[in-house]
Image 1 (cartoon, helix red, strand yellow):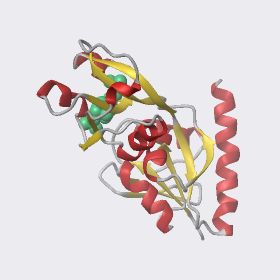
Image 2 (cartoon, protein in one colour):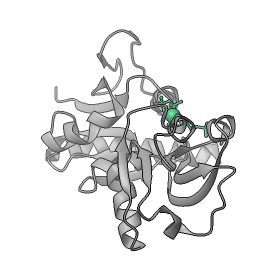
Image 3 (cartoon, helix red, strand yellow):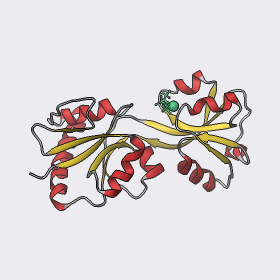
Amino acid sequence: MTKIRIAVQKSGRLNEDSLQILKDCGISIDNGKDQLKATARNFPLEVFYLRNGDIPQYLRDGVVDIAIIGENVLVEKGNDIAVAEKLNFSKCRVSLAVPKGVKYNSVKDFEGKKVATSYPNTVNEYLKSKGVTAELHIINGSVEIAPNIGLAYGICDIVSSGSTLFKNNLKEVEVILQSEAVLAVSPTISEERREILKKIQFRIQSVLQARQ
Ligand code: PRP
Ligand code: MG
């Protein structure tokens, strides 16, 4: 029997809520946490646990058919990938921040400065739209430490509760985008699997409605 292949974040902030929404859809997955692949018991679905940043490419290549992923990752790496549903969890924003002590007037203040980020495309596009040229310093995690160690003037990263900014003595100065978890669809999904997707979407819509 044909199964739809869904990518879910392996570990991190989306993982738990992603599995919860599938569960609320009545789909039970044998949860071998160490396994990178699991099969649903009562629905034609296979789950692939993947790294967030790799998911857009897997969708593009058709290795998976759908994914639960943060919109922010799609904006950064998967502008070509369609969103079927917004999922109303894992809400965050992607923002620019600078040290609290910095006198900040406008985005022009970033002109010629170093910005540390894991979201180079997102920052570049934003700054370009504002006519600002900055030097990007790409790092994969703990971005907020960069200004404190003299690596950058400011940062661009995800802000959720704001506590990481606070702990690192930074202030959010520009919100580039708002993000939440979404159900994304591979551009190469087959017709047969699209039918299975429709069933999942129908269930997701009911779950989201019931959660309101
Ligand atoms: C993420 C993100 C921010 C922080 C935002 O980092 O990169 O640093 O969460 O959340 P907050 O506003 O609620 O503090 P994460 O802890 O996932 O670690 P990483 O940056 O090392 O990937
Ligand atoms: Mg972080």
